Image (cartoon, rainbow, N blue to C red; front, side, top):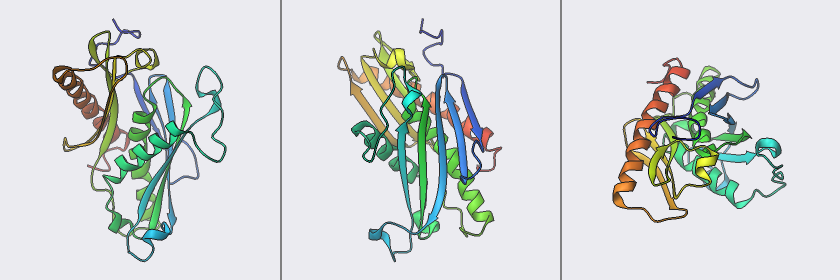
Length: 239
């Protein structure tokens, strides 16, 4: 039995609350169980210098954990984020760029800011899943305000964690499971079933092809459920 009495293939309770803040083009508070991440999306005119004049845009992400998001106070990233935050924000950016047509974005930059309010495992996968919904809202608002003339969103993406805990493959690890997992894997997948990112690490043990396939099967099941939750949250605006 898992610590929260879920079955091995069961997601935590997922909540996606749109328009959580007023000023961002897209703003989502996403909850994976006790993990809560605020994801905002804003579009600014202009692109990085290396893209100026090329007629295309860019998407970039920032990620941070608030000081009270963990059981002991986490020091703020003052000026330079820590290595873990850099890794995660690069991951978020890579994954979300997979569903954006940069040409249709024009010479604009789409900023995704992911702030962990409360951490109980799976913050990076929650950030990816919530950012997609915030991204859709920001693009819709930009089109309504004639900032964008075309919809640059080319697909749908969500992410989830899986792992081997006490020798068994399980879906959507909370912190108590993640901290003791023999193997930890994060998976991001598009609606068409293709993968954007697979991060599998033997934290305390190696893993076999059979175990890998077991984790991947659970991840696919979970992400398909997350895709439906995203669509429902967006009231089926984007199909």
